[in-house]
Image (tube, rainbow, N blue to C red):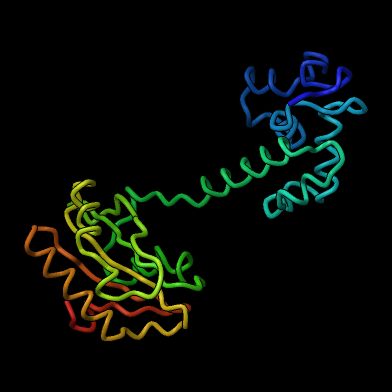
Length: 231
């Protein structure tokens, strides 16, 4: 990317004010929002320093809180924020969101169906398509991995046990819990749900990996097929 010879870079800022150097010397926690944003932007324009540009971005969006929902189009529309800077900021924001939403899976213990529902309810309840996921557990019933395996209208021809148990073997899982959502909001299991559950359970018995439950998620409600007697 070509920049003008008069473009302000972080290196043009007096050393004692350079956010990158401050980050390296004192740690990121000691940087202001403006300084952190300056590090991401990397350079300003020929008319303003990177610190000034960073402050203008924050003012435009009313602070860091509103930045989390901004789009590439909104960012690239700001004078001084080109395609590369906008893409960098959008990527950084998304990365931060993903880190924030990471569940400490190795510490989450499943003791009963309500534990599973609490773990995945917010993730699945508002999805517009059916998502079939599997939770893989160790010998202490701690979740070691979560995998989305199928998306779309679920039926026995789509939900292949081999895909479910291939991941279980890969993760050295002792047991699994299946779950999927009903976009209608009604978690009542269909006959297809029941058939799929029985098929997966039978496959698990053959290879020695127990299927503990199959949870159907609705809008704020759930149904455990184990509690209903189908496992």
